Structures are given as C-alpha cells and as structure tokens.
Image (tube, rainbow, N blue to C red; front, side, top):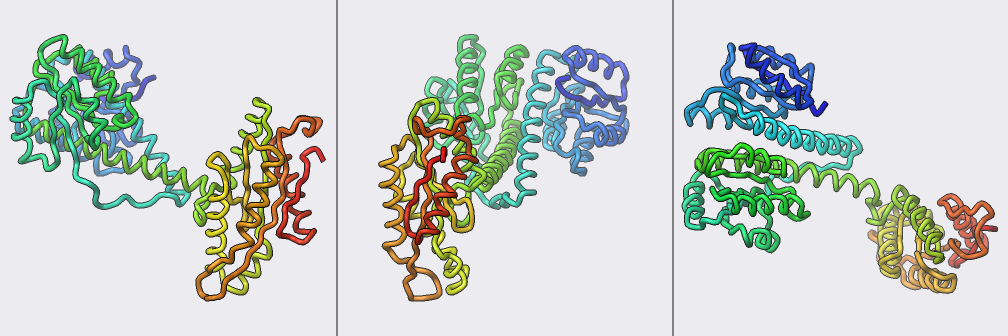
Amino acid sequence: MQGKILIVDAISTNRISLKVQLASAFYEVVQAASAQEACTIARIEAPDLIISALSLPDGTAAQLSAMLQTHPATRTIPIIGVGCRPDQVTRLATLEAGVHDIFLRPVEYGLLLARVRSLIRAHNSAEEWQMRDDTSRALGFAEEPAAFGPPGRAAIVSANRTQTAEWIDALRPTLRCEIVEMAPDTALRDLLLQRVPDVIVLVLSETEHHSGDVMRLLAAIRANAATRHAGLLILQKRADPSLGAYALDLGADDLMTDGFHADELALRIKALMRRKRIGDQLRATVRTGLQAAVCDQLTGLHNRRYALPHLNRIAEHAIATGRPFAVMVADLDHFKRINDHYGHASGDAVLIETAQRLRDKMRAVDMVARIGGEEFLIVMPATTLAEARVAASRLCREIGSRPFIVPGTTELVTVTVSIGMTMGGVPGDTPKDGCLKTECLMDAADKALYAAKLHGRNQVTLRSVAA
C-alpha cells in the first residue's frame, strides 16, 4: 500500500466513490461519518492523509482541522477538503485553519491523486526528519532552534513582468517578507546567484510552449542542491488538471488552479515558509547531531566512532591501490600529573592545544582523531615508511619543544608525547590471513606505543602488523 487515507463524509455514496478511486491507486482507506468520529479514528489508525467533506454533521473541515491540531498524534496530518464551491471568505478561513487544499465536486480524480501523492510525500519526509530530530534529542545532541531568523524571501517567476509587479504590490500589505520577480529564462541563474528564496512561485501562462519551459525549470529547481528545499508553488492562470497533476508529481509543493488571488496566494506562501523554516530547523538539528556523533566535543577532532571505520576504509583502499599507509597512536606523557597539579581546566587546555598542533602539522588528507582521554590516532594514507618516520618525529618535536600556556597559572607547562607507529599495505609485511583490519592495525600501534613508553617516552617506536 502507498499509504493510509481517512475519508470523512456523512454521505456514504461520496465515501464509496472516493474509496474506489483511492483503492485502485493502492491506498488503504478507512472511513468516518463525522468530525468527532474522524478524530477518534485518526488517533487509532494514524492515517497519512485525511480527505474530508467541507460540511460535516458536527462541524466543518476547518473545525475538524482545529480539533486534530489539539492532539500531538494528529496535529501534522495533512487534510484535503472536498465540497461545493465556498465563497472566498469561507475558502480562506478553511485554508487558514490548516486545510491544505480544497477540491470542488465533481472531483477531478487525476489531479486529486497527484495532490494526495504530493501531500503524503511531504508528510512522510517531515515525519522522517522529525524521527531523526527525536533521536538527536534523546542522545543529547540537539539544540533549541533560534527564536529569530532572517526575514522570509519569496520569488515570483513569470514571463509577464508588468503583471508580476502589480501582484507584488497587492501581496505586500499581507505578506511581510521580501518579494522579488524573476524571468523564467534567467530564473535558475538568478536563484543561484542570490540568496535562495524560501518560496518560489512559478506562474504558468496559457501557452503550451511556455508551460513546458516552466515544467523544466521546476524539475531543475527541485534537482539542484542549492534550491531543492525551497517551497515551490505553481500558479495556473487557466485551470489545467493534467498539467497541475504533472507539476505536483515533478515536485511542486502547492498548486493554485484558479489564477491570482492576493489573499490566498499570501496564505499559501506563508504556509510554505513555515514548512520550510521547520524543515530547515530539523535538518540543522540532525546535522548537528551527526556531527556530535562523530566529533570530539572538546577538541573538534573526529572521535573513535568515526576514526575506526575510516581506518578500515583506508586499509581497503590501500589493498586496492597497492599504496602503503601509516597508523600512529600518540599519547601525552604523564598527563595525569597536569590534571592533578594544575586542575582539569588546564588539562583540557593542553588537549585542545595538542589537537591544534597535531592538525596543523598534518596534510589535509590525513586523519587526526581523539580516541581516548589523552590518546590520539593519526592515519596517513599513501605514505611510505620514511615519510611516516619524518612526520612522527615532527609531531614529537611540535609537542615537546614549545611549552603550553594553561589557565590558572603563569607557569609554562612542558608536555611530551610518545608515538607508536605501524605501517599498513606494505608488500611482504602483511599477516598470513591478509588482515589489515582495524583491530590488527590498532593492536600493532598500541604495542609500539607501549614500547615507546617503556623505553623512556617522548619518542617514536615502530612495530610491524605481521610481528
């Protein structure tokens, strides 16, 4: 099944005819005859979409939307209203209450199914990002979104610039955001050169040739990494259900089929801006969570969770290319004395400065990670033994030759580092089982580090994986 849809209508024949169309498109359908029954079923069945008659025995589609929004389990379910043509005031009030779109009877089922696909797609995407956000918050990675952000920005793309200017003037009293106009033939270039709008309105004229250009522009905007998260609204000057359905399936988020109406367009732009803002916040939270999951919060280096799988990938690449690589485990000498004598704030300062020195002395392709309290992993792809020895000795000098400034004292603190090193991907120096996995490499580097500590510290010791 493509999704679950709740049909709400007091007239059984309306429910049956709609169910037939939806079931033929492989949707699971549940039914309710009133707003109250719909709320109860929605909490139990968790539908992906609700299609409701505009008028119900115990209320309206707008009132149903308000009722659903009072419960956490149902407040994000999208709603389509179906009925006779309402007056403009009622139509706007219904949309403002949270109903996503209104279809008139007799229903154009091709367009309705495209709208259903579009809304369920957006709903499922939002749910997926919300789950990732919930996971980030459960792991303690998420931050509260900023209360204020830059003002919204909308663009109207139309071939009729004079008419677009008039529309913008009509929108400004109710739409408190920056509105710009763009021509279809230069819109993609202009979108990439400027701050990407939160919402892009693509205006379809009556000509078939122009419509084709706009459809291609729609596909390009949705496919481009810089613009793909913008809200996209198609405005048809002349109703064309098949073209509207095609636009929704190409990735349009919203559709106006009856031409320009300033209040309704402003309402739809505001709704898309809210959706865009929430989506941006969720994506930012997830990115923050992912970064926190693979980075050490104190030093900013990668952590063990990232470093060990990355080491495996480097080993696999070395086997494929025949180029050796170096693995080093560096450990600060007598680090506990720094914490005990100067305090943990001083110890943290030493770790932060050590991380910076290690990072500064390595190539961009090298990986530096903090894998323990005062232990660091350095991996150098495509590196010979001679190059690795020079790099390791340079790191020892970089740490030991310059004293550290730590908070709480004017005394300069001298710190040294011991490094255990092994080479991977060296011909003739691979274990019999061909093991170049993380555990083999780390074991060899750890044993080399132990030898460096045993023989006086502040030095580099090499150990073969095959040893």
